[in-house]
Image (cartoon, rainbow, N blue to C red):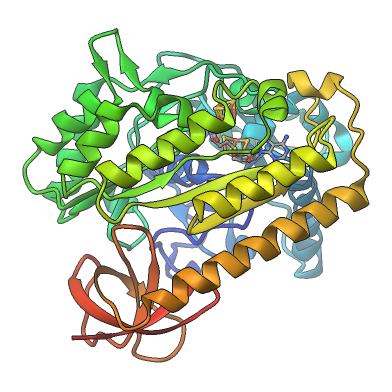
Length: 462
Ligand code: SAH
Ligand code: SF4
Ligand code: F3S
């Protein structure tokens, strides 16, 4: 689920349309997972309500925000170097410095570091403090000087649950709806429980209302979001399956996707529900992380290799056309060649549609940071390459078998190329590019698969 590329943002005012001199403008760049993508919509909505106009050129913005991720060291380094670059580009363009703000997980984890003079950051605003952002930004804009210390608002607040306005979503058909925040699992490698705080549920009534709002504006599909959605529980009354049942009762919804699921919480009762309800997409993103029991124990993942494989077996029987995707970490402290061989074996046994693979990155503050990071970098790189190669071979056979089949798929957005083609997605999360003329986001098609390139299929309407 995690990806450190910047995400494209929702439609917004062009820089030249803004009322220069009267309306202050804001630009925001988003790194990390979908939780940050959602939060970026919240931030923009708060700032717009306070009179700021969003622009998509950082050089034209009075306020430049970076919504950040701490999940691996690399993600943080990218943001630090991007901060320098944003400032440099500004100087080269002879523009006055923008008010520069850090939001997201790095604001929580590196609050003190980021306020050091050398970063020249003006705002540090943590994940539960976005309601304070418009005031802080306005004050900074009015009164900032070389010697003004950064304004800092960080720290978790269990009572804060954001609702992003549906009209600000990116223009595809799947509307993100965060159902909870934080995480209580504390896998030993992971910084998320510390940057996002303890797990805290958005009340079911708020979720249902949010989804009704999406539908009222023409949306037909939602992606339920959380670091651990399958652990959702509302006051011992309602678990994730119960929440899904309530969402299914909302009129007008065609599809529900969700991420991320945790293998520990993929109960048979939940899989049965997904299997019998066609509106819940049969795509399970259930990160395995490792195929070795010894490593899973050291990671505190709460399942064994056998549990994981039993879950996959059950899902394959209970859910028609189910597809799986996963995350894996290689080179966790103490991972031997034999442990890695078991990961490779799990990958080959399950035959995932797609996997995100990561080199272990020690996160100061996470429990595993106390263990010696004893797998050399070159060895981590080798294991990563072996895993990726194995996955490419598996995917090639899955993809080749798909050619000639006819799949239903939903149009999401025009493809960059070829011209006139659209990007579509199946319920099982397979991406297809096809020449569907005059499509609109959300339109449904039946496509014959004619080929594939990398992870995207090529199709034609039938
Ligand atoms: N909540 C999800 C994902 C959390 S972060 C889950 O429970 O699986 C997304 C992915 O980043 C994780 O699945 C893991 O594979 C990877 N990741 C997290 N911490 C990491 C670390 N310290 N080093 C390398 N990869 C990490
Ligand atoms: Fe991190 Fe584990 Fe929580 Fe996922 S379940 S967010 S990997 S601590
Ligand atoms: Fe990164 Fe924070 Fe998401 S650490 S993966 S942006 S919860």
